[in-house]
Amino acid sequence: MLSQQSHPIIAPSASYTITLLKKQLRQLEESKTIEGVSVGLESNSLYQWNISFAGPADTLYEGGYFQAMMKFPEDYPNSPPTFKFLTEMWHPNIYSDGRVCISILHAQDEFNDQEPPETRWRPILTPEDVLISIVSMLSEPNINSPANVDAGIQFRDKPDEYKKKVRKLIDKALENL
Image 1 (cartoon, rainbow, N blue to C red):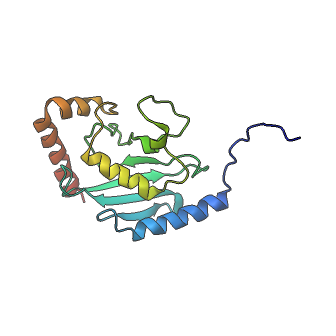
Image 2: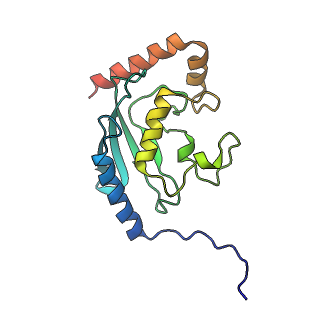
Image 3: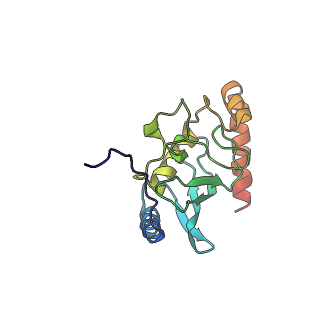
């Protein structure tokens, strides 16, 4: 008789991860979902992607062009990638160092009672899904759980000052291109 033991998740092999990342990189490069997206490898590593994209239309970030780094762990897709803006940002869900804090980038075992499990990372998700969520986050910040508390308070209490600061940073980023 077989025992009723739970089986641990087996980490994917490096060759599987590399094959998957190559496929997902190609899909993102060919994507028409995200306006003006450009993807390249950092130091020729499939585990580190340089990503640039245009700010979403009809949002405060429209007209901006943003640079970021997406890094993948060795056990990807079992664990989520990380996403960090290299462009200076002012947003409630972006830490001051550029790291993004949204549910899709949180592992299933990270406890946060404000996030239902279905909104967190699952191996079926892709880098394109992450980028779509980040573009959506730019237009709809979650001020109930801010990574940047000061930006969250300003967004809520002084929206005109918030908008002015964001526009100033976008103009500064465009000058540095």
